[in-house]
Length: 72
Image: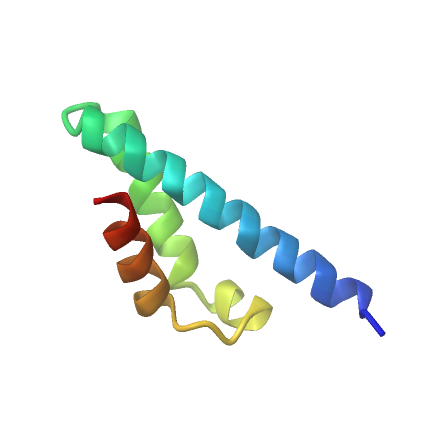
């Protein structure tokens, strides 16, 4: 049985992953643009935040590393 708050937590994490992939793509194309750098850094702060730890048991550093490797 699915628990609604788990579905919401998963949706939040999945959206952050989608946003981070897009931020990495934009950043790699235009690293000089402050807005793209800020988006990337903001999402990294979210992944490392206490709130992220409440939502999931995923290791944030592993997630960030794998997404960066995927984008390379």
